[in-house]
Image (cartoon, rainbow, N blue to C red; front, side, top):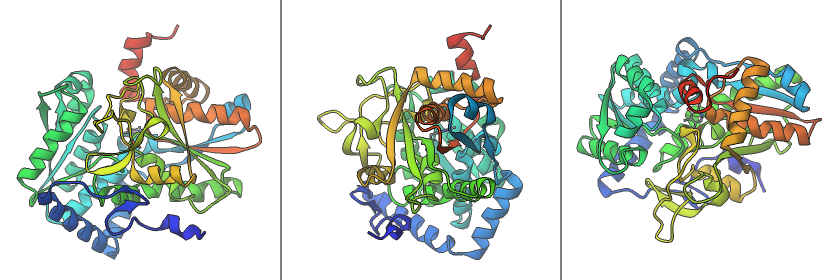
Length: 400
Ligand SMILES: *Cc1c(COP(=O)(O)O)cnc(C)c1O
């Protein structure tokens, strides 16, 4: 089988194998087609590419470094390296696709960016991109999340975004998606819905992946320069799957590199206590696309949970769903407890406080290192932990 296949895009209907596609109201179909056409033409435009390159270098501070964890490698075995997306502007990988989406919006003549946010990370990244380009920004957020994630609400407002509280249903992420969708439907000509991961209808899973691919391309070059070889293992956490697909996409043709995605096992594998979509889900449809989905007999998404709020999504990107079936990547899960242990471990042994999402990837890397002491492991450290400190202190107290 030709490995070139894996570099290629989804088919013209947006399918990665049997996953992805576009299950949306007719009114939006036309709009998605316009976005797809605009993306197709500008992704080949010299002007667009050079503007994005310049933004990445001068505004975001890319390339982010690859760092060798000397103390952790000595302790656990293996050779552990981190791709430092925590050092990307705003402290996570999310700005990589938000800047791309906002630049696309500008080229399409859009005036306003609309999105939902759960923990507020996507909202902050998008509000940052909107400020950079002088676009309006409207972020829909459940009232429960607004109360829980106060610092990010403040950040969005300081950056000039309007935060719309969502007061119906459970007042969390799902209702915020519905609300943002309704706002977008009211004026699809002047606005664009900026999706926060490699999910949603075509072309978003492809487009967001392409914007995140910079992580993998940089890391592959940097790793080779540091070691003269490719990593034996690449590890990343998977919520919707954007940071993972970003780093995986540069290694898909390297059969010697094993790719590991890490999902949240939460408190247990009981329904409602985890968000391990690829591990325990079945193919289904959510938010306009087909993927591995945690769902009931009627196809309604299950409630999900993780200590890392960026990972608690019942679906997962269509390309990951395909990579799992093709066995091009393996998917594992890590519990809340293992995540918290890894959070402290990386903080104390290396002086890097990770996001709880990224701590899932670290926890799996430690297991891998113990089992394979001769191998190298490249972890995508998707974000920094500042946003999680209040939660950590409230829940576990301050260490002695
Ligand atoms: C949002 C977030 C994630 C999860 O999103 P993916 O699309 O799966 O990458 C992971 N890490 C951090 C730091 C995040 O903010």
